[in-house]
Structure formats: structure tokens, C-alpha cells
Length: 457
Image 1 (cartoon, rainbow, N blue to C red):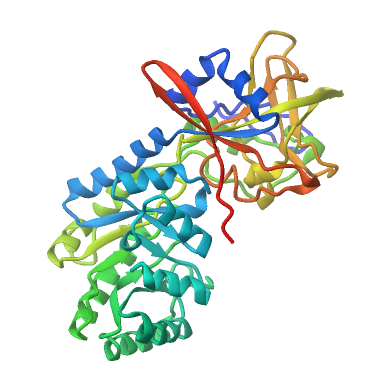
Image 2 (image 1 turned 180 degrees about the horizontal axis):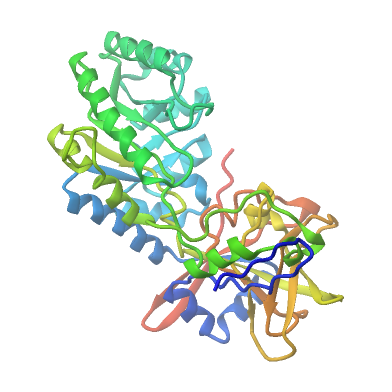
């Protein structure tokens, strides 16, 4: 039965939004000593990372490609998480990595990813990035006419450079990325003129949102562009459809209820948000890739996978969040708490910059988990960070807890590996960044180590 709340001052019942969690996370939390040991060792907030889960997600994408018969490559979108453990997993699984800076490229190489398995994206690349990418035989997604000219000039000194031409999609016409139609035609002519120095391997695009049909339609159109480019003497055998593969964080019924019923009274200070990430959707992950390949094309009765196969075109993709689904969580020690009328305010060691959705004028909605849970008087509570900023809130929503969290407890934010845990982290107040803990399970026992990010300048 659908509940209706016609007026803002009518309070809907508070909603719990438990996260969908993988088995490894549940097993790890069931260990009564492990999180306590880690918390005592690091002395502050920390992120827990599970590379084995990442390998499972990567394998699902690679298997979907293999079973479709379409040749291609999966590139991990490195910007989604800074840790090196994912890169090592990519190297060992013959997967690629998508980078956009010199430190990201160097980090990938340092972890064993071959240069030819790296695609370099982003706008207006630096001279150092273009030079290093050229030296390592990386694939470079060219975003503008002037960037192509810089690539051509550099190829005179470094040898042939591999490129894709990034297309401005019709579905994102206001994007600042990609080549509009006139510029695309010019670049194709220049690539044909300079084909001894520039190896034009195809086209790339990235779409906002998580819809299947626009990705399939644009890939279908770009296959035609590949065929036309081959007539100009270009290689043009690949299409990168970018990222944007969806992830499910919540049970669909919980998400539908929240979308329908949430009110400003559910949030501290009656906070109002303009948007939320779609925390439950379908299809997701590798299933979304399968649906893209099964999509109809402009030719009646033909599927996209058939067009790739019949035209000898490779499919490249750059998932980030989807490869990190269920691969990590973030832990914040509780510093203290207080009561306000009918709810509590909890303060943790750490900052809301470590839960990035808050810093996009939105909210990370999966419930933080109180550890250890314990018994007491149930209460709703919001979660604040340890800075002096009133808007430093990890969770504005008044989350249902079995008891009020107290000093010495831990709050666990589930499924934060994809974009949440480190996209906006800072050392505000001169606080150190949270440590990264890599975990693995061997012979029924958990092992952990601290993963330090390299300082590459």
C-alpha cells in the first residue's frame, strides 16, 4: 500500500536503507577481533579493500565479452579509486587501465600494467603525459583538434602514436568533451594525411547516466564511422563505449519507498537535496554490458554484437564503479554523541570529504553500520565529521540505530570503494588521510596489511 504525505510538515516514518553487501564483508565483520585490531593499529578512520572481489567483477565483464564472441578489452577506470591493489589485479588478469594524469599512468606501470594496455583519456593533456604515453605505446583518446596536432608533432620524435578520436555524443551535446561533427571530419582527414605517424584505431565516447539504449545506438553509428575511416586507409577497428555501468547499492523495494516517501524532516536541519544517485537500478555491471551487446541496431533484426563481429570491430569499455562494486568499505571511530529532541548527533574521527557524495550537494544513502551492534534504546541519529565546519556531515539523514553510538564504537560505511572513499579526501585540519587496509582470506583466516599510496611528483 502506497503511503502519501501531502504536506511537508507531516512526518513520514524514518526509513532504514541497509546496503546490499557481499559475503566477504559479512564474514569479516563477524570476526570479533579483526576490526578492533585494525582500528587500534591505525588510530583513526580507515578504508578496507578486497582485491579478490574486484577480480570477480572483472572476470564477469571479461566473460561476458568472451561469450559474446566480440573481441575487446576491459580498462579499469582508475579515477574511481586511487589504490594500487586494483592495478596489480588488472595486470595479472590481462586487463587494461584508463588513466588521465602522469601520476596515474606511472602508478599503473609501477604495478605491472603494460603500456599498450593503458588508455589515456581526459581533456587537454599535458606535454609530459602525451610524451610518456607515446613512449609506452599507450592508446590516447584525442579530445580536440589542437590536441591532435600536438600528437602529430610529437610523433615526429617518438614514432607512431596510437589514438582514438573522442566523439561528442548527441545525447550529451553540452559536454565540454569530445569532437563535434566539423572537428571530427577535420581530424579524420588529418589522420589520413599523417597515417605513417598516427595510428588511428577508432572512436571513443562517454555518456552521462546509466541507460543501455543510447550507448548501443551510438556504438552502432560509430561502427559505420569505422567502416568509412577504413576507406581512408585508417586502422579504425575499435570503439570505446566508456564507463557508466550501473551498480545496485540497495534493495529495490527500499529504494522505491525512500524515493516516494522521504521528507526534509528525515534529515538533520531539515536538509533538502536536489538529487540522489539511483541506488537501485537494472541492469547493472556485466549484465548491462550483455544488454548493450544484445540491443537492436538500425538494421532490422540485427543485434549489436552481430555488427561488431561481422565488421571485425573491437569493443573497448572503461568501467570504474562497477568493477569496485562490493570491493571495500570505510570505517570511522566514534568520538562522541549528543541528543537533540527526538534524535541523536554522532561525531566520528574523520571528515565527510571521505564520503564523496556529500561533497556533490547530495547524500550517500546506504545505512552506516554500528559495530559492535549491542543492545539499548533504539534511536535515529545523523553523523558529523570531526572538523569545525557545521556542514561537515557524513550522513544528514537520521539513521535508525539499535542504540546511540558512543565513544569507542566504529561506524562502517558499506560499499564505498567506487568513487566514495577517496575522490574528495583532503588533509583539512592537518589530519592524515585514512589508511587503506588490504584484506584477503586464506584457509579460513583473514590477513591484512596497510597499503600506502605512492607520492609521485
